[in-house]
Length: 182
Image (cartoon, rainbow, N blue to C red; front, side, top):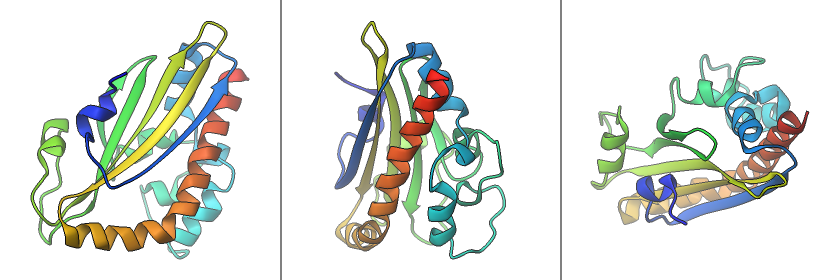
């Protein structure tokens, strides 16, 4: 099955995939994806505090305000909403590495076009598959580095953050499940 994620990240060097079965409708799962907050995700605050070295950051997903929908916060500053198909898929992306003075993409088309040397793009989705008695929600993260130097640079970063990133993704899915089934 082709996804909207495939449109924005058809190739990648780094990725992770996690999924969870939810005993709720596709609509409830989609609403939960859109509304779950950082406070609902186990270990989120601890891991992001470590990632930011305890420094306060305003309007940042790494220092999320209580009760604010995490995807809303993410797409306010760091991430770009690339696709949103209610009941099926939400895709967001961010430039993780960029040359000095580079202009960040402001539209999905600009994001898709970033391919010159010196960049690494992180693209993530939440995909819902209904199966009659509930649904399965999958989240996948793909990172594409546009050249060997950026790939090496991101590779070191990935080595450090991957365990925490994977844990956050699994706990995020559990929070979505709790909210959708509640």
